[in-house]
Structure formats: structure tokens, C-alpha cells
Image (cartoon, rainbow, N blue to C red):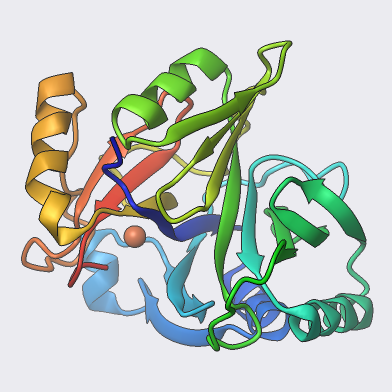
Length: 274
Ligand SMILES: [Fe+2]
């Protein structure tokens, strides 16, 4: 039964906030939002610098790492975050990547059952992205260069444990599993796909925990299902809550956070939360 409706937004670790802000604005057509952790009041709280960037009509985030990460081996890798785009959007992304001298793969046709053509690349911090045109006559919104948040592919050191978590806790439907057991595709009520791929959970350059403000992946729970979602977490014994004192208090408007079996921090949000 569907609990979480859709992949709403994500916050990724980066090794240089200014470089990331510039890259996200140029490549994704992102609109810079609030910068945090750059004044004394926030520093006294222990806030780590992070910036919100509006992409595809949603509020994404980039969070400053505490450590370096190894450079990515190529344009494709794990985890992969993605946005949907129309043909013009894909052409603009390709132009910008060429101008910036960023290596990319694509356009790749039918990289996934739901993607007509995809471009794969890494941002300057090594986060892997796909920008893709959906198959079929999907109605594209006008959220800017990126039309929306797409699929997500996550590392799963134990694929079965991750499938169980996203199925039981978020209510995603298991669509198919690779015969070797190393990958699974799950579908959200929104039609977005979660791909779980067997791989070690690589360093994200900072502590990843539901108890620490930082990178996370947020799923939208409809208001009508919020109470049910929180009760389900309690019943399944999934520890969750708001995060430390470093986060500015927001009167319970920040949803709740939990850890997935791999090490990702998952946020549940509903209407009026961010
Ligand atoms: Fe969030």
C-alpha cells in the first residue's frame, strides 16, 4: 500500500558550495535560494554551510562536506539523482556541459524502461546525475529547464534489506528484480522509479545519520496519509525524528527523518513542510 507518493527533493554533499551553486544554475537552470551556515548566529549553532537551489520546481540542496571524496570513475555511477526534461532542456544541458568541459555520456536511448533518452554526467563534487526525456506523451510542466524530479538509483549493500525497507516502510511496489539479485526497480505512486543496486555504501564526505543535519532524500507523503505513515514507522520500529540543535527550529514543519538500511537519510514530508 502506497505511503510515500513521490520523490520530492534531495540534498547532496559537495566539496565546494560556490562551485556547486554555479554549476547547478548553469546546467540545470537552477535558481539560487537561501544560503545557510554563513553567519555567526548559524555558526554558533554548529550549522554546516548549505544552499538551497530551486530546480524542476522543487527545492534541492547542496551541503558542504567535511572530507574529500575520491573522484568519480566516469560520468555514470552511484548514487544517481535525476531530473526530467524536454528535448530543448536536454539540448541546453548538453551545450552547457560542453562549454564547461564536463564529460558526459549520451544521449543514451532506452537507458531505462521509462527513459527515451538520457544524458549522464557528474557534478564538480562527483555526484552522478541523469537528465532524461520520459517515454510516451507525458505532459511536461513548465518548471524551467528541468521539468521535474525523476528517478533515483541508490547503493544497496544488501539489496533484499533495502527492498524490504522501501516496500514495507514507504509502500513502493517492486516492479522487477534482476535474476542475479543485484538490482531491483520499485515504483512510486507518482510513477517515479527507485532503483536499488548492489554496491558498497561509498563515503559521502561527511557523517550520514538521521540525527545530523545534512544530505538526505525526501519523499512526499500526502496529508491524508501522514498520521498513518508515522504510526507505521512506530509499528515497524523505524526510529525517526527531527534533527539536532544545529538546525533552525521550524515549528515541526520539517517532517521526520530516518536511516535506510544502506546509510541514506530519508525524510518524510507532507504539505506545508520543506
Ligand atoms: Fe529536505
